[in-house]
Image 1 (cartoon, rainbow, N blue to C red):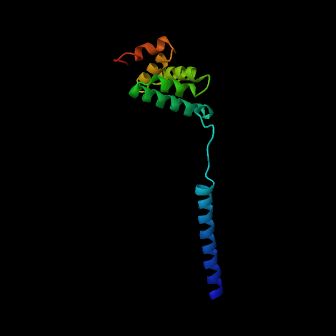
Image 2: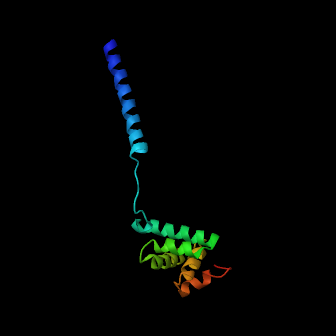
Image 3: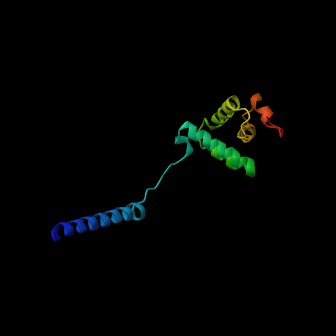
Length: 125
C-alpha cells in the first residue's frame, strides 16, 4: 500500500514543481513583450470604442494635440471613422450622451458635417 501512495506524492510534487517552474519562466524569465501594438490593428467595434474614449478624454482635458495623435494612430482612415461613428450613433440613438464629445472632437479635427451642428452647442438634443 505504501508504493501507490509514494507514487501519488511524487506525482503531485512533480506537478507542483512543473507548474511553478512554468509560471516562473513565463512571467519572470521570458514574459510576453508586445511590439507595434496600436489601435489600427483592432477590430472596427474596438476602434469605435477607442474613439469614444479619446473623445471623452478630449472633452475632459481639452488637449487637441493628444486627441489628434490618438485618432491618427488609427491610420489614414481614423478621422473618417470618427465622423462615421458619430453619424451612426446619431442615427441609431440620437439622445446618447456620447454624441456631444464625439461631435466636438470630429468638428475640432476639421471633419465638418451639418449633422454634427445640433450636438456642438451646450443645449444639445
